[in-house]
Image 1 (cartoon, rainbow, N blue to C red):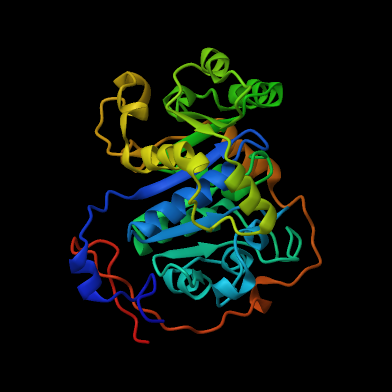
Image 2: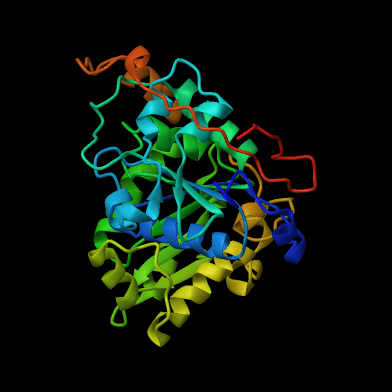
Length: 339
């Protein structure tokens, strides 16, 4: 595939050289807080800036892919389930199961396909999830994980919160978000998981809603993402990866830009809250986050309690595709596989 995520014209790279700070970003928060919207729009924004991005869609209950873009905009439909069903995740396995976005060669996605669910593939363990995230970060400098809210049963989302370089926590301006966070955050109170050092954002703020009240409840808020009627229309039309062009979406686009590049939206926050003892440019430059004992206990409790009669890992079919990795000029995320 010409100029894809794994094969880039070197002249294009010289044309616009941009620093690849990169890292793994886990987008997490309360239900209906806009996790998928922010993840997708951030991935689209970075790809538009010619930065290689892998967007991992962790939701296996309601796969987001059908409302991101038209099926014709996806090249080679492959499933996240095929990756996690393997006994060990490899770099080639991830490449074979990446879906390419035809309208932007810098964006690739990994997620469940339409009609698939958590029982379509055999159960996976935390090892496969960790391998997926670690190897994805070697393939592309920017990895965005669209996590689910149910971290007690979603292994991939829980591992992403553990392994991500940065966690962006979203909350809506409603009592449901407050109830969710008051219920879930105590579970992550172990000293290895410092919830106060996550980047916090109030999302989908409508004109009549008082986001300042949410800031009083949540503490320091890094970003305030407004509601956009244009984004809502894209969501309803299944074109969430489409570009935003209306004037009313300007503030929304500006907040996405702040998240990606680290503008004044959170650079003015106290260092101890956002960048404890460390450097960071943009949301991807923050320090690596740890995880609580609770998340580790999830995996033991989760165990093999789900007995499924679905296909085994040995039955998962992987199509052979030859790809070439882009050269980033730093010795990282490089390599070649003959096409």
